[in-house]
Image (tube, rainbow, N blue to C red):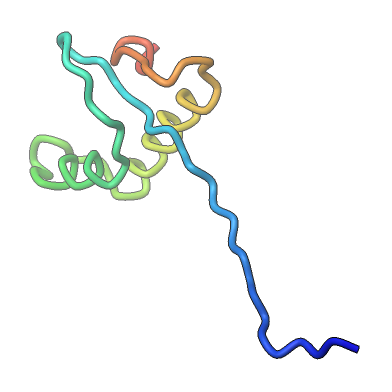
Length: 79
């Protein structure tokens, strides 16, 4: 009988396609943390709470998840 001396483990991971937004003819990768950071940089210009910002970003991600395309214009996201 064969004796097993080593154990091998494999891990699966999902390769996600990045969501892209089109703004003023420029393609930009949607990055949640980057958007949150920019929104928090100037609280006088953007007086929303952190929880409200997170909620808005959840809505934006929802639009991307429901879309059939990986690229959306900023007007598609806002509507």
